[in-house]
Amino acid sequence: MHPAYSVILFTTASGAGYGLLALLGLTGASHGAASSFWYGAACMLVALGLITVGLLSSTFHLGHPERAWRAFSQWRSSWLSREGVLAVATYIPACAFGLLWVFGGNEIAIAITGWITAILAMLTVMCTAMIYASLATIRAWKHWMVVPVYVIFALATGAVLLFALTAIFGRSGIPALGVITMIALALAAAAKFAYWSSIDNMKPVYTMGDATGLGGDVRQWELPHTSENYIQSEMGYKVARKHGARLRMIVAVCLIAALVLVWIAFSLGGEAAPVFAVLAVVLAGAGAVVERWLFFAQARHVVQLFYGESAV
Amino acid sequence: MTILPDTTRPGQKKLGLVIDLDTCVGCQACAVSCKEWNTQGYSAPLTDLEPYGPDPAGVWLNRIHGYESGEGDNARGLHFPRSCLHCETPACVTVCPTGASYKREEDGIVLVNPDTCIGCKLCSWACPYGAREYDQDDGVMKKCTLCVDRIYNENLEPEDRQPACVKACPTGARHFGDLGDETSDVSKLVKSRGGFDLLPQMDYKPVNKYLPPRARRDASNGVKATPLETVGKGDGSLAERVFSWIDGVLS
Image 1 (cartoon, one colour):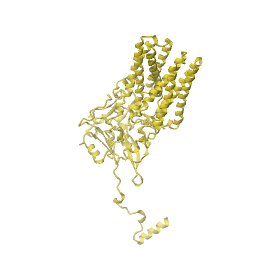
Image 2 (cartoon, rainbow over the protein chains, first blue to last red):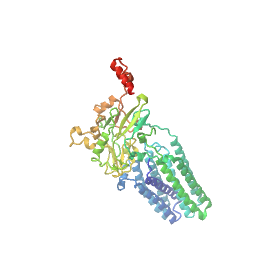
Image 3 (cartoon, rainbow over the protein chains, first blue to last red):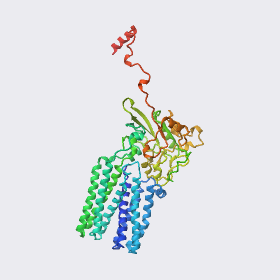
């Protein structure tokens, strides 16, 4: 599948934002108000900023961005519509939580809004994943691990962000946060490799014989057109195939390096900690972007059976 | 609304095409006729980019592939027109976030409303048959309309109220009708010729059907032509010997 940069930016940026938002909600629910106004404000700004930038960038690849509001209407059947509805709905408890948490409101109110924010944020990420996981035409996407991997990547990138923000405010040594961040990064890498290994071992189920109804061994001898059409450029993207293995290693190296940097920042503490923590954010972000790019670029669409692919 | 209409009711109209792979000669008349009609009708135009340049691109709602199947003496090449199959359970409709993509309750035609389509392309991802092509100039998705602006068009003569591709086919390889009605000509044709669905295991339940190529006649039952090399080894007459001598001189 053709990897649209706006969709990659959207799913990784808003994924990290929702991951951070969910962790902030849970932090507020368990610890009450933010430790300081500036810390709380910075965390909420980064979370909502990433989500907003992601949502806006998702409209860039539309043919008619000015009609994007119409996408809120078909939530009864469309995961894309559900994602849009939940993405906007999450702002309401998130803003309420943010105000209460940053300005030190009632603890019970913080806990309630924190939980609602965390749940809606995760549901939004799950809807994003379901847009892909519901497509029977792309076998690598209609896979039970797609939704968990999206959630784990959102939480892992969100956790690194939270760790870095906390380190910047001089508290890199919180054991729970450091440990959760490292576990999340390790889980993200492990889950992604398990997913890759699973899709690599998938046996083809549809053949050119099924697509054309002719059965048996069918060969293509003539294309309908002399130059590439939309179907081929959108659903026949092959650039990543030759770099696939190397790019997967880059994802692993980025995530593990981020994990090591978090560990260094956590155990070193002091003034150097924020530097290592911010570097970890950059690496985890890069890993997530490459991972998302591969998710699209390596996915093969059933329609390719009509264009010469013998089995999918 | 992207919720699908209930198409299980008895007597539900299911308009669609039946395409005969036995008689299609791959002349592209249906594709050209489709382009010609639909570039000026519903959801027009069907944009072409650099049509006379080195790398032309554009939206076509009907594409004619060439495939070969079978081995050795049984191998055969055939032409394969591919367009929207107006499925009974089209995921292209249910994934649409805006309701621009819809399946008509009255006749089952799958359409895109060009005024509400946001151009997110998700419907084209959901289609296993590559039936939807994005118009990057218009910013909306285009697809076969089953010539909805012809088949009900009272400004046309009754015999012209058929999809443009069906009217254009010179070999009668394309048939249009109600596949929900068991007594219709197209339903009878599908039954008698063993019409089939494309990718039936994906369960999109296409309405359009394809007719398989007829079985190749067994050579042993056919007309036996005299092998060419025996021609000329005939009665041994003078004329024959003269021709044989000339043949030898010339060879």
